[in-house]
Image 1 (cartoon, rainbow, N blue to C red):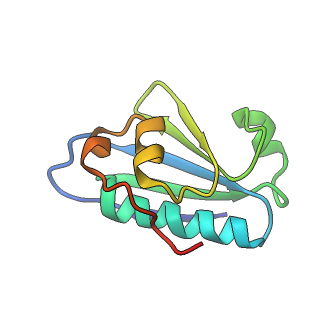
Image 2: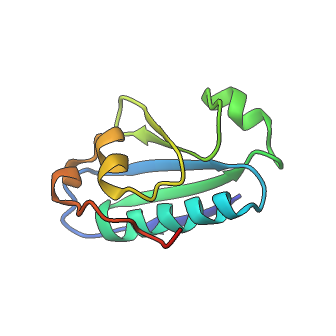
Image 3: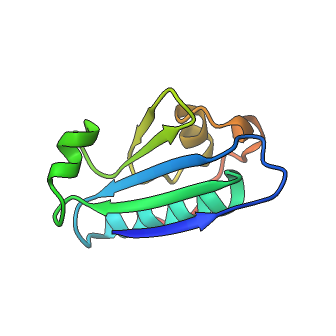
Length: 113
């Protein structure tokens, strides 16, 4: 499990808590981790990202209601929102997670596939 925090002053949403569930060290998992970190750095102010490898902690999937990986879960602010996939479409991810700057995000991929 890894954790990275991206805090920015003047945040619109206080404390965006994100958890990315991945399965092992596959290319899809690596791409999802890269995309999640870039998403936080570029688009989500005052965010905290935790990455959980379901191979190391399979119980986390059950506890969080995760059925597929990669899955990005926004736990805070409530209500909880989920997005399944490699997170390459910024606009789709931000809309699915109902993050406030979704309308300003470019409809372009984060990392090369």
